Length: 508
Image (cartoon, helix red, strand yellow):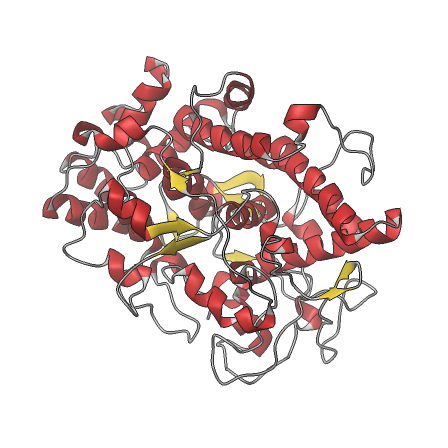
């Protein structure tokens, strides 16, 4: 179904396409770190290591399955932001977890003896292969190592859509990624020649990646500049729209301003695990079961959006068979994914759509080990020593009236079984941070009718994103830069503006 399933080590798949890229010796990358190291050292601020806790996490994750896909729980956020947030996540961290030979993450997380790793083990076994978070490495490659995707002079090379299908949108055919040929091996069959294979895991993120390549090419044409100049221009606009368009969709203004003007005293040097392993995974709850892809496919299931299935043009993926490139009738109508379109993200709440509880690999087979994404997320936080939601709320200094109580967990539980697990475990007072963030967002919606994170989740996400942008050389947060070259309106650049510059956003 998907070329790289959740639970598969991301670095394993990257090595499969390394022959198509030029690789040189490794360079220092940005490590993972803790936003609040003292909390991760304090047993009272962590989940209790025990067989019961491990079982309770599995039971809690099992209660998060959304079998009904009730439209009452659609949010006001356009679905494009779910997948742009995923694209951004890939640009922040490329995680390599050292495990037993041949073992996948899903198998590791299904170990009945799983326990929290020591900080030494985390430092030794968990590596981030990114050099500059939010530096567009996922598009441009590891520039120090010269791992660059295919180019055509100062421009990126693009793949041409398969000509055997009627196209209902766009005049040109350059709407796919450059790919390898057919192969009987699922992992090598029509693999995209890009620096981050995760950006070709599903059609929506893949089409975002195409848009970035096309936007770069448009900058070269418009400004008559070099490849490197175009990269720097696109990077500035990209970070601007993350801060001014993506972040405000999910985070309250007060958390963004606090992160910008009154940041934590000692921001971590690396990517905070509290952010990467917990708070930023709120997007898993926003995924829909089906999408209005375009006027030819008004209801396409999530399972059919994984790229090998799309290329095989059938209900299941068939290695070595199907279109060499994206079928022309599967090009996204991006208008359907923004304001006024058909696709809304799901509300941020402690629930996820059913396909994410039966994860499958690239051969459409159930993954070995833990198959439920919600359980994976909960167990990963336990393994990586992520402090509880209450511990983070106390450390950040959340107002007492905004902290979650037992009554809140009962009120915002999505079903009676969920609260039963909470009250028969330690989780009412020591709540896994990811689950706390989701419940906090459900409360936030109830109070304000806004689909946003609450104070703990929002502050962690804002703090990390703002710090990544601030660290970037010549960042607009440091020098007062405002967008101009690519704007349709002075000083304003949104995700839709990027897509318009790329020539992939059809007129309203």
